[in-house]
Structures are given as C-alpha cells and as structure tokens.
Length: 305
Image (cartoon, rainbow, N blue to C red; front, side, top):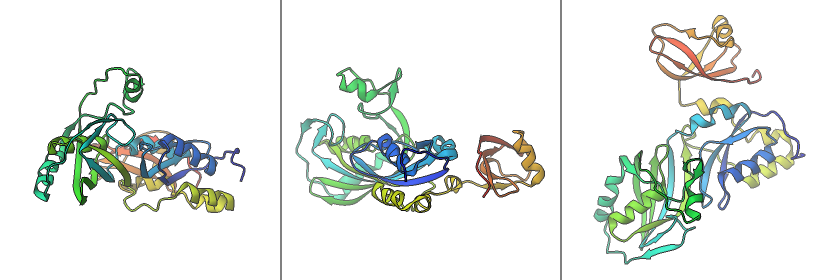
C-alpha cells in the first residue's frame, strides 16, 4: 500500500515497542504503516524500554489520555553497585560501590518500603516539564534540576531472579511511577546504589494479556494489503473493556445524540462507563452521577458496526 496516503481508520494497536525507539518514533512508524490520519500513544516508554505501547488511531485517540492513568506491569533488570546520571544504561557512571552479601531477607526488607502508596522522586532525566521545558533538556544543558517528589502507587514489587549483582523484578504500578526511581531507591536501601539495565512493559490495563504486534509484523501486514493490516487493530471499545457498559434505547440514543444528559434512574450504578446506542454503536465515554444521570465525557463519531 502507499504509505503516503492516509485514511480514516479507528482502533487500537498493541505495539511491541522495539529497543532504541522513543514512543513517538514508534507511533509515527506504526501510523505510517497503518495509514492512519490521526494517532496517539497512551503513555511513554523510554528508548531503552521494550514491550506494550498501546497506540490509538482515529476516534480511539479520544480515550488515549484517559488510558494514561491505567495500571501497568513491567519486568525490570536492576544492576547493583553502580549509579548513573540517568538511573539507567544511557547515563554516565557516577559512582561504583561494592555490593554487600545479600540474602533473600535483606532484599525483601529493602523492597517492602517501596510497595503501596509511596513518595517518589522522578529522575532528573525525565519528560516531566517545568515551565514548559522537559527536565531531561534542562539536565543535558547542565542546569540544576530540582525535581519535585510525587505520590505514586506500587501494587506489586517482587524478585523473579537474583544472579550475582543483578536482580530481575516484577513491577505492577499506577500512573506516574518511574521504575528507574524504584531501582535508585532500592540501591540506596541496600547501601550500594543501583541503576536500571533493562525494562519491558508486560501489560497496561485493560490489555492484561496483550497479543502484541511488532513493527516487522505490521510491515508485513501492510505489504499484504488493507485487510491483514486492519486485522492487527482492536476496535475502539476494547479500550473500555474494564468499565461498565450502558446500552441506550432509541429515545435515549436520540437525547444523547443531541449532547444532552440522559436520566437512567436511581438504580443506575454511578461511575464511568462506555455508552452504546440502540444501533449497537459506541457513542461515548460517559459518567453516571449519583443522581442517576448519564453525562458525556468524550463523544465518538464511529461508523455503524
């Protein structure tokens, strides 16, 4: 297919981001192959990280920002005894220290305070912006970077393997958590320092068992034609699979179509929901209030199923 021609295509691609590409580079490569006129990703992965990067195309981009706050899981490799400027392999070595003799109990004692609701200082080399400028740009200029701490949630942090001075960890965390900072804090707790040497994102809610597609597979599908290419995409509603589904009748569909709130009654469950019209078309990401009234958060303009 002609990769210079773009089309109206709507859906979600579960990309297996390769090593060495930024999230935006991976997005643009996939968007060109898919031929999507509009695309966005649902949360950055560092160039040295691989794994699941959900990409949204067309109308699905309307939920990309909402999916940023989803729970995520990673497999991380941490090297003890060495700290770097970036807290990962990209940076220059700052300090090398001997690693003390470790046993399972010592490692677990260092990991325990890093679980649950914790206060974390993100890396100075991060995409967090201050006065509109990413911190990593300030850090590369040699400017003093004062990184504010933030509260994040770590649901799971377990050792999968311990081999010499290297730990392989399973991490499940909420939005805004930096695994690089977990590595730094773990190294500090063990008294020897540490940095991240490998990171792979395993899943992002609601894609808990993702069938990921590589750029090579996407390229092969693009060469085969639009049908194999479109088969790589999930429908937009797949991004709403973890929230309740509300189905409207014909009268309610008309009301919502005019952008008006829809009374559902006192028995309606409050909270966010996906909203389908009487033609089984996804109409909106909505929210039901405690008053039983459905209001639109983001409306979709999808073709009929």
